[in-house]
Image 1 (cartoon, helix red, strand yellow):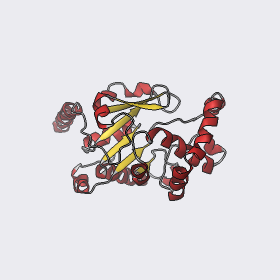
Image 2: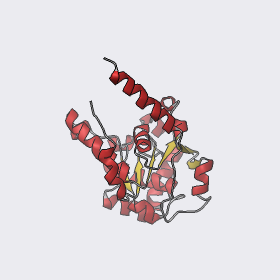
Image 3: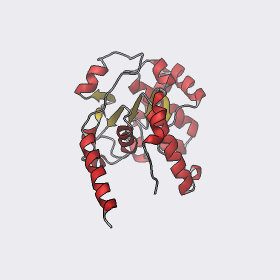
Image 4: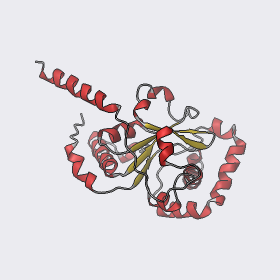
Length: 237
């Protein structure tokens, strides 16, 4: 069992960790079926590699961009990398300036088993991720396994949701959790912020700084009840 104490990470909060993206949604094709059934979108995707060539090449050369592999990775990891950078930029450039996106950190939860072959290494890797999350000024993610720890660590987090991309992750797993986050819904190739986030991301305005986001307080009562429940359980012989 991995036991975590929030005090382990408190000191890390003194250092601004900038903006972190953890597997955010953008146009992707995770299966051959979706790839070949969307020929026009595939062609647009390749066109974007050249349309945004300056950003794509800068990000590719820095090797900072980490993402969940798509069906293109089976053809060529390099093509997959360029493809994903271009699709990501096409969506998130509408919110952030190039300087913010180039300086952001990119993390994926899709880690090869060979990189973490033992339970001990898995726990060590988990702690490293949590330290990165607690350092962040803002985390943007489509992973509940990232968003929930961010709430616990009091790190501002935006959850990117999309009911249209069921082939990536089942939306049914979010029931009872999604209301805890500020949401941007990814649909029709765009991000649609909730009413709170709409005030932080003005329409057609590319931000040159990381916006100041406050998490919703909805999770606090749940946390208190969970602590009481665990304390009662541990106190019983």
